Image 1: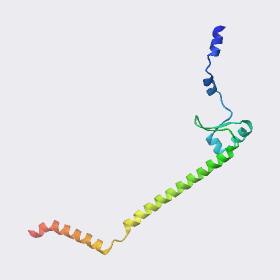
Image 2: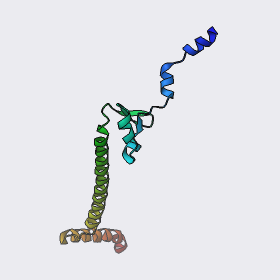
Image 3: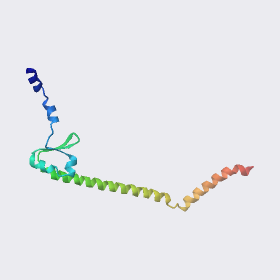
Image 4: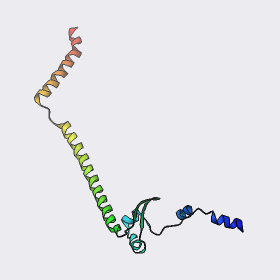
Length: 131
């Protein structure tokens, strides 16, 4: 009987707490995408927002959830807008590179390149002409 009591008293309370489900927890995805947080506001004074296994926020005033939800949605919209803007800038940059490659050269630039090419050709054929 004493052994049984010892076994019962050797239970690690922190381990037990970790294994028990907490009703006042909500995952961040449920906070963003559903209304599962509404009953938590009415039922608990403290609400934990979790991501995976980690608590990312602990709200002692659950009425903050609607404003937190608004902020999350706002940040998500800003992120999407920045992604669109980034893609547009990448496309503009690529277009500018292509336009620069296709730009007509000035007359002096073209004549210099032509003279250099002719000089190179003359040097290559110069040995043939000397014979």
